[in-house]
Length: 533
Image (cartoon, rainbow, N blue to C red; front, side):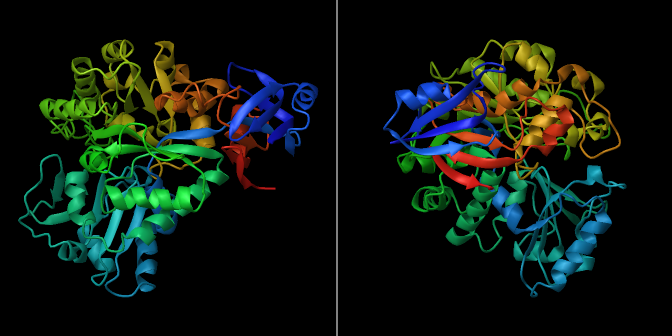
């Protein structure tokens, strides 16, 4: 027995403006589409449920192609700094938090971004010491490639003043040589993060539950998430995913990128590419090649404009990178590589050209922000997908123009150029670094403007996407990124019955009115997981 969906604007996403009047689903699959009368006649006696969409708009289920699901849940559970627009407001919120927290308990806050402050002076160790000497304090930057701590946190992590800087990480100091509390990149940050208490099964499951419930409300039916290395290792995190999604029946299509340092554990547990459970699948090996632009650790081919003594950080040498790619290939896995700077991007292309993926697989270049034209031409000839975050445009501009050389920016954040070259693009948020709401990413792809601002500057007019192309990033693009373009991403016979229903027709409103679009129903595997009404 199946379900009949009707009385709405049902966009298939097979091609622009393609609509059907009704959809019939059964056992988690789209069985038929067409006119309402045809489906009622064709499937008479087999319709057990009728869903009246009441004039609302149904699309294939939206999927975030790059996020950190547990991290997003943590952000919902912790002190959120992302909307605080000055160092003073952050300091006040920390003072208040400390006043309500027993001495000795860790204070962990997420999302500071000095580029949005009137004065971009960082909050460092001494300022945090002035707030509290009794609480270990950790502030994570919005990019998650940097954090800052106070002296109590250094003490708890047993970090001494003479600590040596790890390869691929940065430990910053005051001019007098003292540690200033700022740690950049995971190799350095983990010296602190490994000492955080409370990362147990219950904690991870609570964070996942919060994150998935929030995803439902935003119309997301799935996400490609990278969490397996950060929460007591591979197995506890994987077990938490199974407990929440499978055992508690919180259906959510989770594709787990496998951090290179969790790779061996995954193999030892019997995991492999596209193996897993009904809703949880292992995906590509995740590799970091550089850091972030905000922290000046993204690897550029030229020095930073505002700090000429650095061009970023290479997490691996080219030889080391290729060694990891070889391990992925030996296991039959594609790679998903974090590459923000153009030099990091070049290193990845070199590795893929030397060690191409298995026939039928595609590698994923995550972020693909700073890219030279000749690198784009090389990428267009390879089996790769660009995993882009449209929300980075309103987030990074205009401050990125003060950091990255102008000649490198000319062909960067170039979503339209990528598509014109025939490069498949998938759309994600990188939550909790940016908000999870896919509508914000879609609006950014279409307008390339900041929201809620009197400044109507368009950052890259020629690189704007159509509304159809923007939604395709989160439907067809996300499906292609995991090799599921013949099962997901469109409303068609034989495809999974995953749908996102909005309160308005997103293809019939002005670009700014996209921000009024609100998910009112989220359907996964023919199950209504969220119904606002």
